[in-house]
Every structure is written in C-alpha cells, then in structure tokens.
Amino acid sequence: MSEIAHLAATLFRMASGRDRVVVAIAGPPGAGKSTFAEALLALLPENSAAIVPMDGFHYDNAVLETRGLRARKGAPETFDFEGFRALLERLRKGGGEVAVPVFDRGSDLARAGGSIVGADTKYILVEGNYLLLDESPWYGLAPLFDYSVYLDVPRPELEKRLIQRWLDHDHTPEAARERAMSNDIPNAERVIARRRSVDIVIRPPG
Image (cartoon, rainbow, N blue to C red):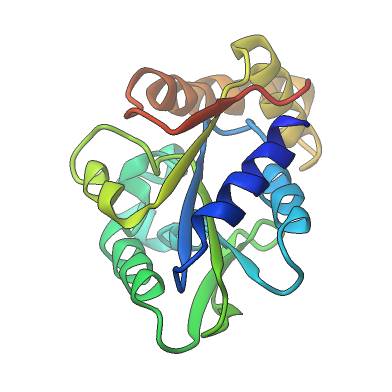
C-alpha cells in the first residue's frame, strides 16, 4: 500500500465515532502540499472531505507595504494568524457551514468566502507552510489538529520548484532565482528547522 493510501486508511479508521477529523498537511514552500491534499481527498469517501488552505489568510499587499513586509510576503509574519486560528476553531467545533477565504495567485489577492465547508464534512484537510511551526503564536495551533502530516522534500528539489514557480509567472531566470533565494528559501529553511513533532513524515516523489 502506498504511503498516501495508508494515510487515507488511517484517517478513515480515526473518523469512526467522530463527527470530524482535522488534519494538518504542512511542509516548506514548494513541497507540493496542495497537490498532496488533492490526492488525499480523492482517496477519502466521496463528498466527505474539504481542503482548507492557509494561504487565504495572506495579508493584502497594501497592508504589507505599510508594515514594511512586502518583500517578505509568505513569511509567518505576513499572515493573519488570529483570523486563521478562529477559522480552525469554527471548523473543529462544527455544527454549520463555514466560509473559507481562498488565495488567488493570478490576482495575488485573497477572496473572502472563496469556498464553503459543509456542516456534514467529515475530514478537514488543512494545508499550509506554518501549521507545525514551533514558534509563537503558531504552536498554539497544535490542539486544533487531530493528525499531522509533514512533506519532506530535499532542498535542491525545493530550489528547483520555487525558481520554476517564478518562471511560470513570467520572471526572467535571474529574477526568478532572486525571488526564490531571497524569500522563499529562507521561509523553507525556517519551516524545516523549526517544526514540531509530527504523526507522519512523507517524502513525495520528485
């Protein structure tokens, strides 16, 4: 059985007798968290799961400009942590549908109410860089997750993926490498060096 199939089976067993299971899918930028979450969702019972990306809680660029953080967008300090935690608390509590903001990479903006998590959703797959970050205030998220997954990708592969991400946004090779190495890679190194203990570490294929 593949690692992801084994994980799906584990979550299915864990859900027995519970109304909801909240799963953290964490890893550095470029690790493939969104792709992994989609693949896991496909292995869970149909219409039983929803993906909740942390990226919907990016501060707007105008806010980052006023705080001198525009060049560091994507670092822990550039997210609305309190808003994100409040959302997770609502999701964990259940009892009704919950609107979730979604980040639109094309427009570089978060869209409020971009998706809806239904009241009967059993599995909440939360994906984001800093879900397992052992720094204040992020370690306060720990009690909100029932199970945690960390995607471990070698640094050379992360660099390759992150540079390609900026190339795909029409940056020159030089600009793409600069963007990746000046912000994305420092963020990745912070995630790798400062993560809490985790239920399972998965090394996705390159």
